[in-house]
Image (cartoon, rainbow, N blue to C red; front, top):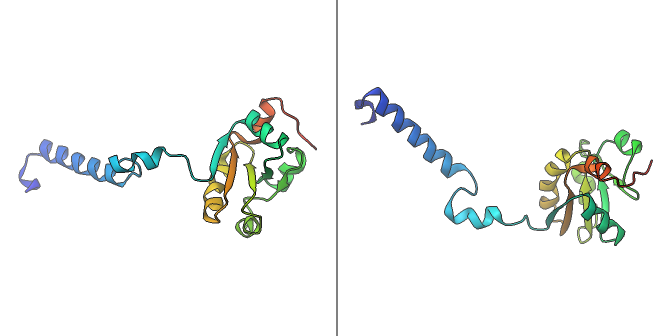
Length: 147
């Protein structure tokens, strides 16, 4: 049926079909998924450097620095625990942590730590705070670094 149309109509029909298929394949694009897509991730909160500092000062979180050990030793948030996201045993090491406690997770600029959030969800952590912008945002805010 579609092949009996002229080339312009065929192209338009193909674009329309592909658009509908793409629309249906993107999570959160359906009307029924809108509430789920806009809801915060269960157990995960995103914070800026000042909010993170307050959580640390109030002793509400354990700081997990997931950068490489060389990055960690060059400068870190005081009291942070280092678990390298790029190591093959990362998932095993976080699984050994107490999942009922709250953790502030960060890397250098937020890339690795954002990817790690899926693993924290997978291992059923109850409370994760993500330091948006990582330690670079912490430093940019003028907050102290321990060496």
